[in-house]
Image 1: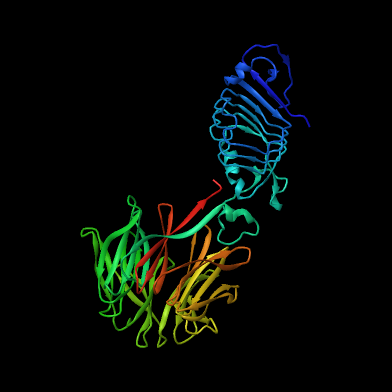
Image 2: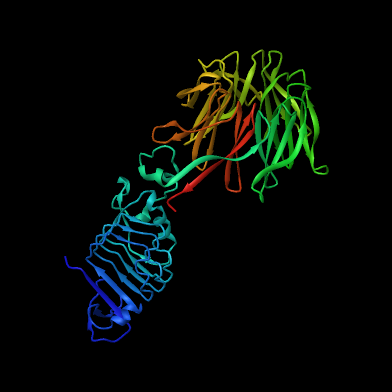
Length: 520
């Protein structure tokens, strides 16, 4: 196959008419580079350049920068497979670019950078792998003002021979890394997900709660060794969490925020001296004691769970002592009063409120029996026994979450296997067992359609699992070191995602969930 170059300058040599095979392009007077006007070529006065039927393998960076006056560039029917970054740098006046009939596999994401006058781009005769590596081109096609020919996909299978513009979105497929994506195997090269330490708080803690108030994000951290409930706020300038207020007490094991209208309350659960409720006082710009919780009912609080039924606000405290009573409290427009004692002598470790098939339920876990399920009775307006989760003794924590329209729960066991279970319209059935070594918490959380589980360990590294949509299981994603973790809490603010890892024996750590899209 012959290789030829056609160039057009603004000088006037002996010329002939030539037909340029590029569709609706204005006809140009052309001459062969072997003929006169070489002086003009050296001085960059060429405004049309055609390299057809060549054999070069790639368009390198700044390959045509010595031709700054080009207005039309034809690269049809060559054999190159790659167009590098800044391949057309310096061609500020280029209007027409034709790359028909090549074997292009990769166009670098900055290949067209600097083409400010481009009006027509022809990519016909090339087929692209429409995976994550083509995401930038997909987005560029939607934003450019240039007229671009149809870009056809050669794969993946469901996109074969379809137009790149017809791909719905790359957002889901290109952000499921950490696990090999079977459907889009190249995605692991396009998007990088990780959890990195953002901030270290120099104190122990056992629980973290988050709440929003007046467009600001706060967290309340229970610090039993320092006898504090530390309230932090997000600093939009420094991009860190800073101290906001400090509620003092005795052996504080839980701080739970409750928002009622424009009022902010914090339930402070203590092992000694009784538990209390604090209210934020605008005039004092701090939390002040609002009411006490009956010592006779709550002896050894282990968890506080907030929920709402029929627009009425409740919270329940799970009591883990034999002498205590796990109790539901209700807001009566003046304060919170004890509404229902759930049962005695069962050393409850956790309470979880959840909606099952449109009905309100509580699940109580216990050190002395299997988890029990209570259902809200709309007539008596009380919780009544409804069932249990068999063969799961000695559960320390139960957490619920929804994913793909399905309801799941996690059951944490200190030694043995913690469980992930799914509701099948009749009961919870096990879908996965996760080996536990000194686990006090198995916490589900989600960031940007990525679903995770954090499994704590007192004896080794804590583990973060990520949901594999193909396998329908959680796969190990990352290990982190947290001394004696007691809770993991997700917090999002300023388009950034964090989770707090409380530590009973070490520093409290704040990890940030990062997404680096390498396809852009």
